[in-house]
Figure 1 (cartoon, rainbow, N blue to C red):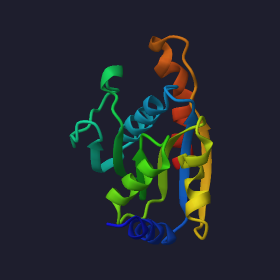
Figure 2 (cartoon, rainbow, N blue to C red):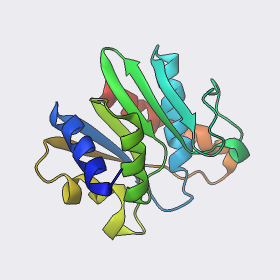
Figure 3 (cartoon, rainbow, N blue to C red):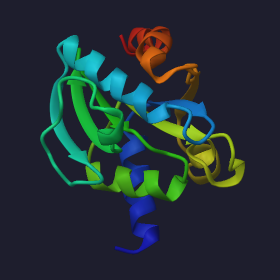
Figure 4 (cartoon, rainbow, N blue to C red):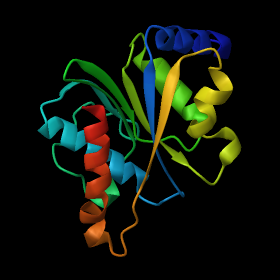
Length: 172
C-alpha cells in the first residue's frame, strides 16, 4: 500500500469523530514505555477489554497482566474498549513514521483516544507534531503528559503512579 493510501485511510478514520491524542513525552530512555505499560495494566484492572494486542518485538498476541520485567518491556500496540470508548495504545512514538504504520494496522478503527509516546529530542519528526503537520484538516485534541523520572529503578512504579492515575482519570 502506498504511503498516500495509508494517510488517506488514517485520515478517514479520524474524521469520524474527534480523536483525543494523549502523548507521553520525555527524553529517549526516560521511561515512557514503562509508563504506557502501567496505563495499559491500570485500564485492565479497571475492566477494559482487550480487542487487539501485539508485542512489536516478539509479535506475540498474548499480553501480560502484571508489569513485565524491565528487560521484557517491549513496545506494543493495543486496542481496548473501556466505558464505551475505544482506546488505541501505541507504546512508542519517537519516530512519527512508526506511529503512522501502527495506526494503519489497527484501521478501520474510529478511536476516541490514541495514547502514544514522543521523544522531545527530535522535534521535527515526532508524534507530537504528527497530527499538526500531517492531519491539518482534522478535528483532534492533543494532550501532553510528562513521564516522571525515578532515581532508582525500584522506585519507578511509585514515581510514575500519579501520572498513570492522571491519564486514566482523563480517559474516564
